[in-house]
Image 1 (cartoon, rainbow, N blue to C red):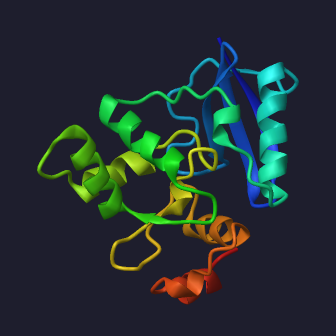
Image 2: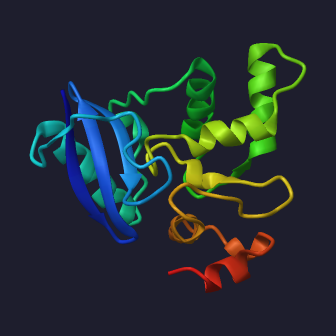
Image 3: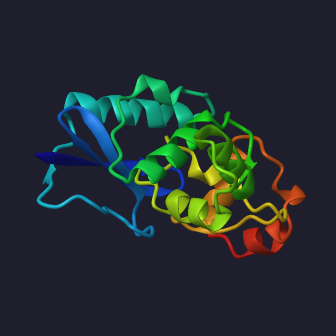
Length: 180
């Protein structure tokens, strides 16, 4: 059985999903792929896992740097997506990495000559555990703040909250002016 709970973040409401005490999803309301891979979920805001995740999120949004390793995570995805999400978990708080960097890391780890940054981007976009698996820290190799399933406005807010100067990214000022 999958249980869901709501969380009100400073950047919008979120839905978390857990199964057997393990977090399987965390999405901003209305984000791309919202609630993907969960069906027949039952709302349950006060179970032990939901409370633990909410406390982690409270600390994160308070500017602390909680470790994702504190939480049991089990996002559903292919082996390739799992490998990409593992790299995302390695990105330190307040730092960014490009899709191309991730592709090069994966190629090296898997002993491949090349991995497509575009395919990496698809895996990043399908990350079902927003914020905790920090896909918002991935930027374009060309210095642009590229897409975020939760919306570019939320990506900018998350990066700024982590102390990242977004003015170093091309088109960041224009994107932030359109931010909600």
